[in-house]
Image (cartoon, rainbow, N blue to C red; front, side):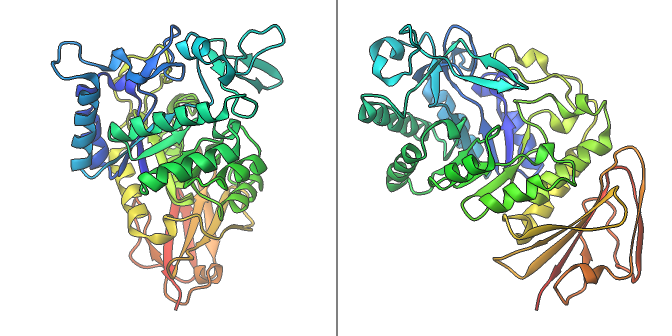
Length: 423
């Protein structure tokens, strides 16, 4: 999956999505992911859904004679004609606090000791953050589990009927694994090609593994925060990879814009997208990353007027990385992967070996985005199992011949990517 995240509040109404989809197609993406498109509650947050079977008025053309559902179906069909499959957020761990569901089906919700509806929360650096515009579904303890389950099945069928072939399940680990297992099984009986991806950020590796085993096709990994050295990422990767494939991203709508974080460092932007592209089965990139947008995507306040003047243009680079990913099987699976020790702490050497083909890959990456690093090896083939020569398939300035010995001065943030094959 090469996923372009079309953030609906920035893209605007459905009939304004076409140029963004065209741009994503030219960059080699094959999936479009959109955040929640259903009617929100009074807070206006995309993730505070009040009516699961009505679309967000902000995204609808009120002057059109076509129904809101028809408007969305038409843009989804247009994307499919361009070779895309469509993914949308599925938010069933909570709903809007002012949704009529809270009043009509109180048994579906968790409640505080005083009887008030419970709000979801998280702990951020020791500080409890409560989302008071949300009401938490009680999947674990509801006295009407069948009613809640049937309602969630209806939501998924509605989204499929709108033209979506995949759902990204928001905060999936907050919903019991047995609930997901039953839901996924039932939906796939009717729609076997439907893809389920679990958003599991912020939970432990064991929670991620338990969620993945419920039948998810994909989970989202935490490679964005890796320092290219600490063991935790590969530990999580190998703990989960046999249960479900994973999706990397250099940035998402939940975090600050990377271009702002790195103070406009183009080399850091390239480094992070390339690594996300070659590390795991899938890769996702939000709208605006290609232009170095700095303003964070906001689930309430963002509007099309927040579109920024491009600070950079990474489209040629992203296109090359996506082509690289689509060309080699070793970059399309969560396969055996390890970091090889190297005497320069500023350089990471990573080896990957496909289990579905005879391909191997070697990634030599400059961890530093401000200065150059020297890499030297008596023979690069000592790092791989394959007997065939290594081919430089780097997205920028690949060399035609890999010499022995191999010496190279890595530019800031640069990665050299090599592929070879086993007999």
